[in-house]
View 1 (cartoon, one colour):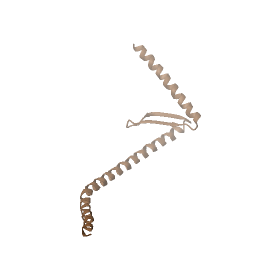
View 2 (cartoon, helix red, strand yellow; view 1 turned 45 degrees about the vertical axis):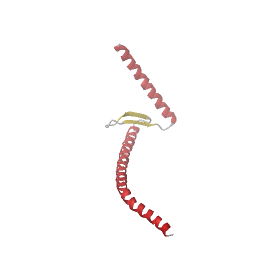
View 3 (cartoon, helix red, strand yellow; view 1 turned 30 degrees about the horizontal axis):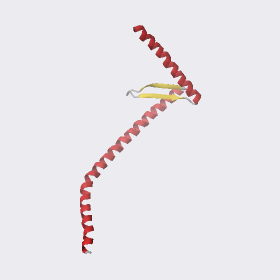
View 4 (cartoon, helix red, strand yellow; view 1 turned 135 degrees about the vertical axis):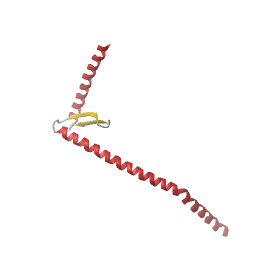
Length: 118
């Protein structure tokens, strides 16, 4: 019985002694990584809020002059921007039809210029 009670104590001492040494550097690295991830996430949230605010301002400003519209372009950082304001599915379909018409007209112009060059 004396041997049985000493075996668990040895295991506890061995695991207790090895756990802090092995886990302390890992805990510090994990803590630093988590802090860095939180900082990045906070900055991304702020940036997303800024973008959402700018999009909202654009929609409001253009909406004063146009009932339904699509805005396609690039912001100052080169990121694509595509905004659509349509109140009903019918208005949305009308905008999409206009966009298709726009592309078909410009593709025809491109094809004419392309064929003239050759």
